[in-house]
Length: 352
Image 1 (cartoon, rainbow, N blue to C red):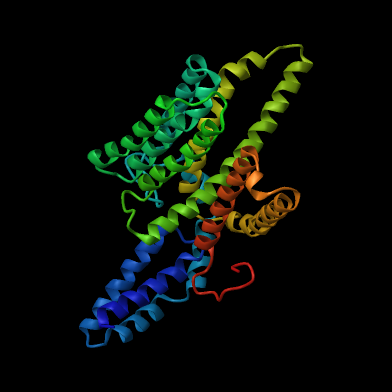
Image 2: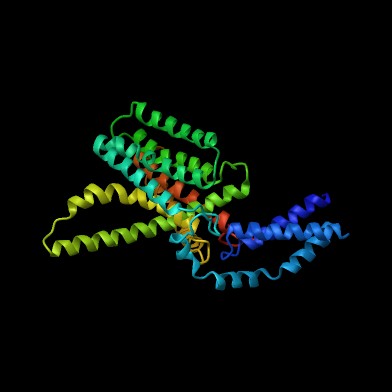
């Protein structure tokens, strides 16, 4: 291995270690890496080898743990300030654009309008089949805008949506048939990969960026679940309070809250994952360690029960579709657990 390749390998390992500290955001890691490279270059110019320059530069930057604790103390109050209060004409430390909150609200509103139009104009089966087409394009638009993608590259991301829409609406599905159900299940999975291309800013060949998207997916699911639970509690309290007053608000919830709240929550969850600055410890890896073995155990139990109760060739399609959904969940948990683990830690029972 030549000196340059060895240096890049050492910097990559250093970056992986620093990135594992949740209080340091990716942009802060980029800045630290820039300082590290500058020092390595200066030390190399002074006559040190690349390996010697790297070790001295890392030593000069100090303990990563001390940097993490200092960063957390100095910025412990910046999370919610930066979610809403962004100085005009500047970008925040997280690299967000000014007026990002306004863009998020506008895209969430557009997604809500699309859902409401679908509820008004499409039959129920077509609505379910096309559900992912109402929200995910706006999520793609958010990331394409945030990553400053070229207009031509961003416009190209519309092609998979057009092809998917054509397939979902031109194929002669049997009403409520298994093929239609499978198409409704897998269309959002396919289009989520398009969201991933927008998330990485078109850098889909980068393994690091792909793993970043996997981590984003896990955190997005957690945030979306928390928003959904909070929204359900809020709706329940609202119905109870107005019901006690004898005021009927169900029509308002059906006409406006139901079409706008779910797509708005999906856009808001993506924004929260992007904006949280990783100052607080992420609970997604903890939840993954809890639910991955439970889900795998459920899948194995279901498989054993299927084999024991009937011929595996005689399993009906409804059960196969159910197992398909479980496999999608297991695959998502597996990918996220791989992306969230410390690359320098030895394999353990959970990895097995």
